[in-house]
Image (tube, rainbow, N blue to C red):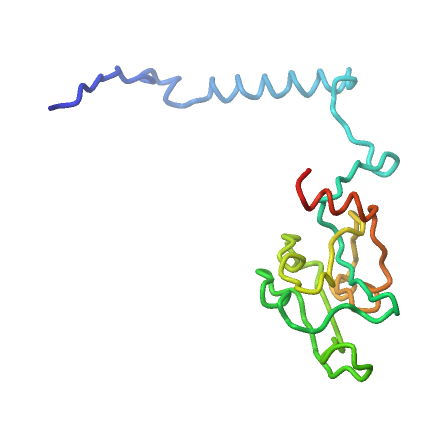
Length: 176
């Protein structure tokens, strides 16, 4: 059984259509029209006045990382390397050491995340068996003038607090 093929006539046979100059000028005219309209009347533009008006951030939003602590102030992280292994960007670096207080066997001696390499996927949070790392600080704007300042260490992550109430964060994780 043969397929029915419909042949369409070829367009663009005139020299003006082959050069495409007319179409280029038509496109530039439309661009100029929009530019001038927005220049004289910008009331219809959708602009977010960022520094003055802060955006609404949902509880499931993934931002800067933080490490959680036990009620006695010790880090929950047991240096199992699950977050480092699961990270597709390889931006987490952990050095483990033995724990002397007897709570667990290991603890991180250093825990560093390079925010310039992080893709904020949240796989480190999902992989953590101890719920020691979260991305719920509510910090959405961080910049730096040099690359070394983009690396945050364990002391900085332990000092950060959650940006959302715990109930709202749990609801966000459940997808409600």
